[in-house]
Picture 1 (cartoon, helix red, strand yellow):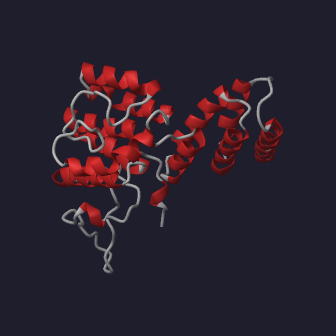
Picture 2 (cartoon, helix red, strand yellow):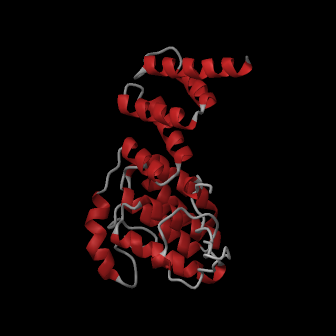
Picture 3 (cartoon, rainbow, N blue to C red):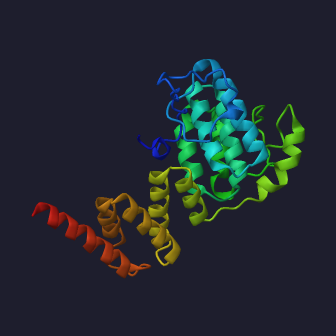
Length: 255
């Protein structure tokens, strides 16, 4: 049986399980809270999209640093195509990450910018570098769970607001969260971008090499090595060793 948990896409719904008789079971009537926590494999049925989106929003209220739920919620709201929903979801991601996770915030904003108003887009763009916290003046969102300006159930916001605003991610933390969530390509891109800017960081270099080694992505390693050029960078000898290993396998295959 294939391992669906390793599908590297930001939004999908659980596979339909088989009963003992081998018949597909329809779990759409089930409340989303009873899902198994696996990666989604396709957008949920239209009739339960609102339930899934609300379930993810509640998860974020309880645990603002749950990046998997943030990404799934943003992607689901984008699938629905509703401005109010998508703005609330992307605003919560910005608040949860503070001034950390710049690459992730930038990529998510680019994915949903077509559904934002000019005011929403400009406000989020201004917060990319400095970060956004729950108390910042922003266009009002009735679907944001972390903003102090949210309308509706403010008790949840009061409970998590201070911890959400204080979150600050380092590149390695963000990359590992993405990897744990199954988003290996996003983690690789983040580390590659960071490696160019912080060439002397052993931890970034080691994490990126680990991805190349795990995915057997020799082409990506060679391309990144070319970008780094001849100037010194962290763990260069390990890059050379892995590049030689990939080259040896290629030559062996040709033989």
